[in-house]
Length: 166
Figure 1 (cartoon, rainbow, N blue to C red):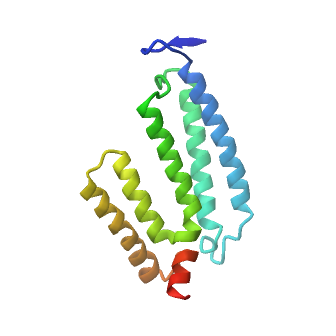
Figure 2: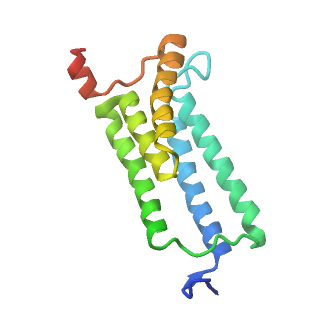
C-alpha cells in the first residue's frame, strides 16, 4: 500500500513502517537485554557493572513493545521521509552519535560530551551561548555527581590519561 506524499513521491504506508521498525528495534533490544543479563549485577543487586545495561535493555524492550502495540491501529502518520537539508541534518545527528561513541575511549567522557552537546545543540538550532553553557556545565555536573559525590571513576580517555601522565 502506497500513500501519496505532499511532495509528490510515493512512500510506504507510515503505520506499516512504524510497526516494522519498532519490531526490529525491539528485537535488537531483546538481544541487548540478553547480553546485559549475563553481566554481574553485584552484591547487593544493582551495584555491579550489569545493573545499568540491564535497566537500559528493559526500558528499550518495554518502549519498543509499547510503540509496536500502540501502532497496531494504523492511525499513525509519520509523513514522508526527510529530503534535502532535513535529511542531511538527520544524517549529521546520526554521525555525531557514532563519533561520540567512537571518541569516548580516546577523549574521555568530559571532552567528548562537551563537544557532542555543543554540536548537537547547534544542529537543533540553539543559540551559541546556550550551547556552550550546556556543553560546559554538563561535564562539570558529571564530575561533581559521579567523581566527587558517588566516588565513581569516569573514563578520562587514553589521550587525557597520556597528557596527565596517569
